[in-house]
Length: 110
View (cartoon, rainbow, N blue to C red):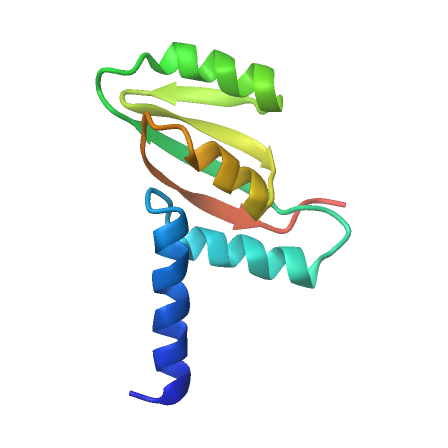
């Protein structure tokens, strides 16, 4: 394994320690877009998976009220769509009811 690969693996491991319930690849994609296109945060389709005991409609109301994102519920979670940065994803990930965060990030429309 090359030295670059070793550093990359350490980098991924450190991110995972900070936000253990979040897809590291999603965070890296968002960071990449934030640095390449600095005018506006990337558009993110954020999938929030909750424990089966959590009411997704209640969480939907919280996400809408706090962040203003349109959301859709599914059987064990919801999807929020909007312009997001890594700091916001990190803040959302602190919800102890979230099992896993995944999603996609693309350049926002201008």
